[in-house]
Amino acid sequence: MTYNFDPQRWFEDRRALLDVRLERGEMDPGEHARALEELHERYERMVARLDGTYRIPGGGDGSPG
Picture 1 (cartoon, rainbow, N blue to C red):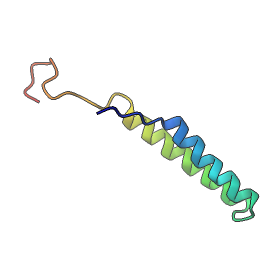
Picture 2 (picture 1 turned 180 degrees about the vertical axis):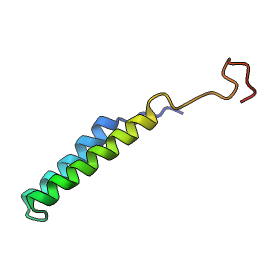
Picture 3 (picture 1 turned 60 degrees about the vertical axis):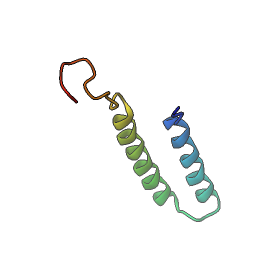
């Protein structure tokens, strides 16, 4: 299975949605700023999890997995 998830695209798509909500008046600038900060934090946590977390059990270190 190929997994083509693009975290940067995920972030940009969600940021664009927040920008639209601000433009429509659904959020005030303070809410928008807080939502952007939360989104950025989520992105950073996600990237940290995705970065090198996949390991093949018993992947050559002599352990059984």
